[in-house]
Length: 306
Image (cartoon, rainbow, N blue to C red; front, side, top):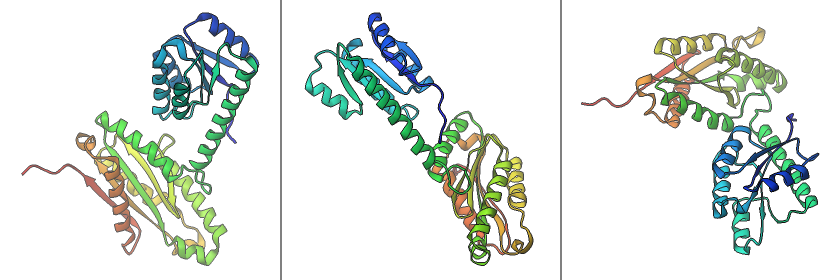
């Protein structure tokens, strides 16, 4: 189960008196209360701290409050943060629009303190339940590495950010060939142990700051940036040699194959992440067809002018 720091509420209101009132009402319900008097300030705070709930006075900037909701929902880091609106005489159509945009509740002002506290507690529970489900989904149950879907989302952002800074991009796709045969001969429990050992080896080679995932079976993926061709090849060969050390009867049953896609710094910005990933997996399939384990590396580049 994830562990949490103290709960945080972000309060957006133009009236200092309302800030003080909500501060008092939330005492004992939320550990930390942050305050903003503008939409831009509230959005910036939300992105910095990712609060457990946002409480916004609709009258602070009129219809602009909907921009706050859109901004929170559009950012991947805050899209799951619950929003509770506080309103005086809000039209039915506006209430419906706010709820359609994902607002948790619209409370009438003056605010009833019991209703405010109940909705705040419900918002915190809902956000943390979502985060627990997300954490469970993003982890591979066997190895503890990231799941493929979670890795793909984070790795694509990582590669995009690095290549925009004119650094190279490399994706490594590693597979333990013969794993299915091994599973049939020594049993799933022993094979699972070998996969967990291989996962630790992959993580050690990739480094603590590198994103690693298990795609399925004995296949792993990880990224690297800022390498020249020689460094990328050296890491590829090191991985093929060290990622999995066979023991005893496993020696002739499993070998390591590695597919690598590498883009030089000058061209990396123009190569989409999906293209890089497809090339790494394609070179892995080529490596798997060889008689013995090893590395197949592909250097991606833009088409040359005639």
